[in-house]
Image (cartoon, rainbow, N blue to C red; front, side, top):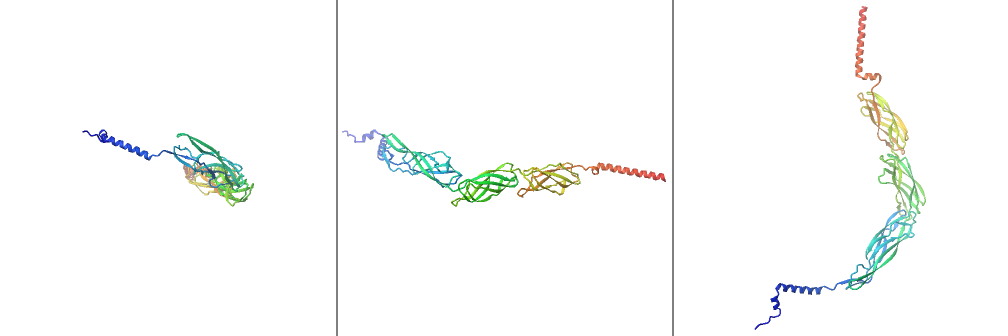
Length: 452
């Protein structure tokens, strides 16, 4: 009697156990996937749009006669109020609250300004974000104090709607919009400074002098308690000594003369150098302000130098003598109360090394005498002795010139002195004298013998 196999027995007899386990695992995986994976869903915004506002970053108060970089903040406070998430919806690339391709243009209207910047593209501004844009603005010199409105025009595009056609096609509808916002722009009460003329007085390298500036308030407001301030410009060799002048009330259109003392370093060259000036004052609101710095050039003359124009003085070894030296002022200013000094070094000595020259104008000369002694063993040649001139400048400041060389020639002695100083000649003279004496003695002896 043959029994039929029970259900499942034939499978186990015909399939290996490894294949049986693989089929079982695949069945479980398919079942799990069907249970845990929902249908794919997309997002659709039913409403919303950008809401752009603008404001000046920092203070909105500006001074006439200045060029400023005005920073404007563009902020998007738009909201997406209704959002739908549903299977079969295709996600949108943009959301309605994003302002796209934003262009910002700043206008002048009747404000006393000049807009130097072109319209600027700032890209996309998403909701709850902001962007910063900068404009170069020149506030006119004659700008009157007050509050003005600068028109700011914002051009942008946003997603108004997106129609879905079937399961794989979207049609976008974008809308362009122009928005104008008025920015409050405040011009402070201020003065404006002009330098009308520059008058130098005895300004030379290595000395001090004065510069007179003619200043004008070309603004429309009065500066109270005004003070003019002279400022060194970079590394200029011209340095202010007395750098402030009190003006007081500086009224619109008023012109004042301000005189400053300056000093010039010795390495300055005869050319124009820069200086700067500004005016500090109180405006109508009681604020202490400063005008923009005004640069100007100031001519500087050559420093006072002296040249020796006389021929070399002569002296002889072992003797004291007098030499004459002529000094010429080759500078561009007068040297007052000038005194010449000579430095005597070996083989020279001197107890009289200072001589008075007096006032020497540019190109004038002065001659002085020095008494020097020369060593007996001095080599016969031309020496150069150091000399300098101490003088006073136009402001009575003591100055010392650069060192100049005074030529002094040591020459042989002339006449009997020259003969006496030569040892050979002295020896010959001694022989002649002795011979002559012997001759005279012999002659006297003969005479006495004849007489006897």
